[in-house]
Structure formats: C-alpha cells, structure tokens
Amino acid sequence: MSHLPRVSGRGLVAAVAAVAAVVGGVATQSSGAPTAVQETALQQRLDSLLNDSRYDGSQVELVVLDATTGETLYNRNGDQRMLPASNTKLFTSTAAMHVLGPSYRFHTDVLATAPVRGGKLRGDLYLKGYGDPTALESDYVGLAKQLKAAGVRRVDGDLIADDSYFDHVRLGDSWAWDDEPYYYNAQISALTLAPNTDYDSGTAIVETRPGAAAGAPVNLNLVPANGVLKIVNTATTGAAGTSNTISVDRDHGTNVVRVTGSMPLGSAVEQDWVTVWEPELYAADVFRRALTAQGISVSGHIKNATTPTGASRLARDESMTVGELLTPFLKLSNNMHAETLVKAMGAVVEADGSWPAGLDVVTNYAKSVGVDTSRIRLSDGSGLSRKVNVTGDAITDILIAARKEPWFQQWYDALPIAGNPDRFVGGTLRSRMQNTPAANNLHGKTGSLTGVTALSGYVSNKDGRKLVFSMISNNYLVSPRSIEDAVGVTLASWSDQGTPPAAVSNLKTAQTTCDLEWDKAC
Image 1 (cartoon, rainbow, N blue to C red):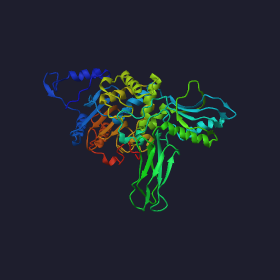
Image 2 (image 1 turned 60 degrees about the vertical axis):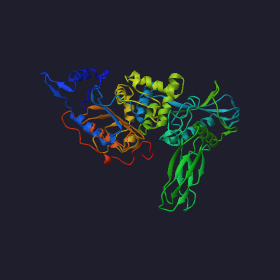
Image 3 (image 1 turned 120 degrees about the vertical axis):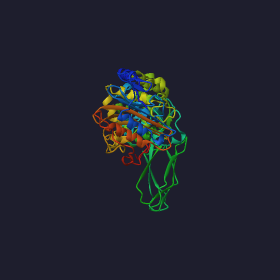
Image 4 (image 1 turned 45 degrees about the vertical axis):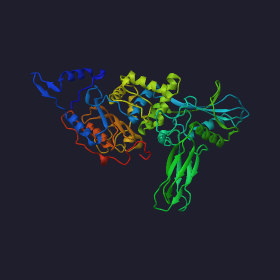
C-alpha cells in the first residue's frame, strides 16, 4: 500500500508535492514514463508489523510524523475513529496546562458563619472542597491544626461537607457498572481524599494480614481509619502454602465492604483499594477524627450542605500545582485526576463544574490548536468511557501543537518513558521496550481497555530526528501490545542515512506480566 502525506496546515507544501508526483498509484518521472511507487524501508517494516494475524477481524491505525515539519512518514487509517482508552488523557492534560495553567492549585477551606468566642464556635463548621484530588489524611490534620492555632476548641453545631463546586454526577458517561468498586473507577467529588501518594482520590486501602493460626479470621486494617466504610469480614487464615483467595469488594450503592476467602499462614500484608460511595462524607469523617485528635470536639453530625454566602474562612489547605500533578497523573495514568481536571476547567471557565462544561473547554482547546474536532467525540477525560472516539490524526495534531506551548517541557517530562524502571519516571511504560533503542527515548501515553490498546507520543530515531506517532488497536481477541512495542523500537532504530530499521517482530522478553495499566501491581 502507498502511504501519502495527509494534507494539513503544518505539512501542506510537502503534501502537495508528494501528491502531485503520484497519479493513480504510479509515480511519473521527468521522462514521462510511469514507475511503481516504492515504499520506504520504514514503511515496509511498519507494514510488516501491522500485517499480523492478530488484526484479522480487528482494527489498527498508525500515524507517524516528523515532529518539527509535520511531514507524514506513515499513515494507516489515521482518519478513522477508534476507542483510545487512556490516550484520551493527552487531550485532557494539554487543555488543563493551557486553561488552568501549570501553577494552578486546588484548595480546601474550613469556614463558619458564627463567630468563635471563648474557644467555642456556636454554629456549624463547613468543610468546602474545590476539587483537590491530592488531599491526604495529613492535609486534613493540617487543617485541624490551623483551627486549633486559631483558638477553636469546640464546635456546637454540625460538620458540613460541601462539595458543591462540582455537580453531583459521580460517575462518567457509560462507565461500566462492574468496574465501579475498583480504584481506577472512583467517584468524582469536589471534596475527596486519597489514601496514598499515588493520590488515588475517592478510595481507601484495606490491609489484610493472616491470623495467628490456621482457621483464625484474617486481621484487617483500614487506611486511613474512618467510620464511613463498614467492613464485613468472613475471610479466614489458611494453612501455610495454601492458595490466597482473598477478595475485597464493595456492595454497589453502599459503603459495605466484604472481605472473603482465605489467606495462607505466614503471608505478607496484602493491600486492596476500594472506592468510596459519596467521598465527601469520607473526607469529612477523616477531618472530624483529625479535629478530635487536636482536642476539638464537634457536638453535631456530619451532613451534606452548601456553605452559606458570606461565611468566614478559618483555614485553608492548598494542593501541589497542576504542573506537579502531571507526574502522578500521566506516569500512573490516574483516571480520577483526569476527570477532576475536566470538571475544574468547567468550573473555572464556565462556572459549571460538570463533565459537559469541562469537555467543552477541552474540545475548544483542541480546536484552537488545529484538531478537526468535528471528527472526534470526547465523553470523559480519562478514556474509561466507551463513547470516546478519536483519530490518530487528531492525537498527532495535539502532540505537534504541544511542542509549541510554553509548558511543553514539564508536560513532556511527565509522560511515561519506555524501559525506565523507576515507577515515577517510566510509569506505565517502565517494563516495556527495555534494553532497546526506545528505552529512555520514547515518551508516550499508554491506553488499556478490554479489546483496546494504544500508545502515542514522541521518539527520536537513530539520527536524533524527533518523531510523533499514534497507534491504536481495537476489537482484537489476542493482545497486539508486543506489536505496539515493536513499532516503538522500529521508529527508534530507523535512520535517514540508509540504515534499515531494526528487525523487530516480538518483544515478549522485554515485557513482564504487567500488561494492563489498571493493575495496581504494575
């Protein structure tokens, strides 16, 4: 097949010249004698990789451009809409850097309408979130310490959890019901809490340890401690050497978490993440515990409500910057960060912290940098939705445009880097393309859903020529991820000086069992 440059503003001259030289599948020489169009060695190698039997009955698209000139080096099906999975985050993250800016910080406030007299707040205490997905238990402790320093010793009213900065739609469009208990599918709230420094907002960790003897109940610990999740433990300790069948699941629509199965005697501590139903109440519960630890009592209950206009701020916690958030967000492909950024963009630009408003902002940014947004559909910010449809052409347009932005270097550094074993450097690519020309070279965004794998980003060829690429595979039965990696290595080893691309057909030896970005062990 021939691979002609697609016509776009950035590569128009080269495209017109190439198209003018090709008529009906033949190239016309100056003598007028037609000759067959010859594919380059790179195109031939990429064709051979994509002509794999795993694509029988399924779809694949691959676009490769020169990152500087926009010249198309390869384009198979680049104008076809595909499910991109977490490649959707390329649109969300670039829009967030442009709209919110690298220095933007989320915050959480503690407010009151009544005065504090003699250490007593004679009214309700309001905990209002503004979307911080990085809030930890230690941040709520810090807020409690600020109140103590301000002289508060007792709250005579209720503790009000206010997450009205965002709307109350907790889960994204077409998110799968059977994913809902798992950490990558947590509810989105403007007031939330993460149990760890991966910043898995809206989740808690259930730690499981074997009992003292076979037959004893397993021991459980909740991180952070809270009274919102209700643990039902029927799991037992098995004999040493038996199978570990521990399962931790939350009942739909409740905060009842059931721990079942068996854990062999002598096993190491196991951690399982569970999502929380109505995470603003979870955050308020942890905050109340922090208040108690600081000697501040609350006589009332935890309730949902909106903070009255004119309330006075007593304490504030600020998050890391959006630029800093990119590292856990993109390296670990954190879905909740993506959705929080979408709603925050809607709140900031349109005073509407909803998915429709935020996605309008993301789409408008993409359109402003040259993406043909009439040919794509964004239904969420993370790519969990099965309604998201984008093209390889649109992704490479975003990648080209990002290089011209003042924040590009920080964003580029936050992308996973192939073959680098450091979790916060290699990210979801740390076990892929190891010990190849792509290692510590290719910066890309992965994507994983059942029947979907994607990889898009930047790589330099053997001569140092910077390339952008996007590869998306859909509806396969056997994973073509090793082909994805082979494409990355092929691009990294290719030379303009006549050196053929490396002969790469399978990279199983460079992979581990960590094949899915939603596997917390990876």
